[in-house]
Image (cartoon, rainbow, N blue to C red):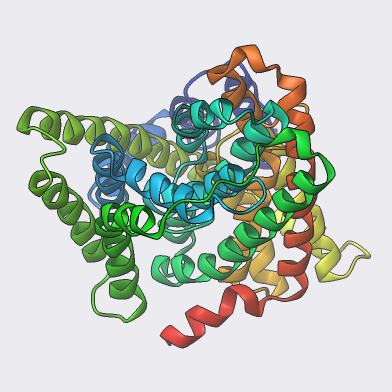
Length: 433
């Protein structure tokens, strides 16, 4: 049996294990070890298991993930994100569908801190829906906007999928972070405009706009100021080349802990628990990275990337048409899986093809991250739709899907714009250089 056939069998094993809900890190390791043992023998497979875990965990570049995870968990546990939501609600409340627009903006802010759309999908319903429900928002608009805004978390930096993409492809994580800002803000604005249009078409889906006194708005802004300053400081450090991305992550994590300590948002016991939670999340992510490195070795030895690259580039299609096919694969996978695992699965297969076609890797990273975000709210299996529904089971999944569809169409339009106008994602990284 040829190595190529063995590699395809192992790829099938990995997919089966994934759908059997085996933890993804173990699915990668099991299928990778089977392939390496089959192709190279037990001794070589054991050698990989001796070296890959240490080399992965000991890599300095991977330190960026636990640092930003600590920053996000500290901000969440310390209720700093709640202050940001309250400020957005009071400043945007006078707009039609103001609470839904507030949730979209707050999801962007939360995403800039959290970096995970699944976490955002679980946190934002608890934070936003009670207030929306109190103001007679329909589930279509309220929960639909929450589900649609959750994927902003993987596009607006610091984003875990972008960090994983940068590490695995050797692309500058700082450049990827900067590249995500303009498309992320563009999408946030487009979704806010869509909310206004929805409310104009369905005025019964939202309460009347609510105005707040300037004094109350300024007070809320003062409460949100620490977290906003922290996020801006981290981005300036990266964009201005003042620090490396890892150092910026350290500044963000330390800054969040200091803010919570000064404001007495967290006790010492709660801080210790936050650090413990971060360690557990980072351990899970490192297990994924170890698994993908073992699986990458199996895939590389099998020759699948070379075979797929030769096959795809020989198709009677233009490079852009080939890229649309790749995007379709990301879209399908994004329906079932979070952004970071999708990136890990697809990089070994598609990165060599994209490189051979001559596309900019930064642009491709942003493009595929946005595609994963679209998959996350694509019915009938979009993961964010189900997560939001699980938090508010009495609302009904069908109503959430109905409300998310206008936003889904908006995200597809944004993807097409980004595809044909690459400078939207390359402008800020170009200024860094």
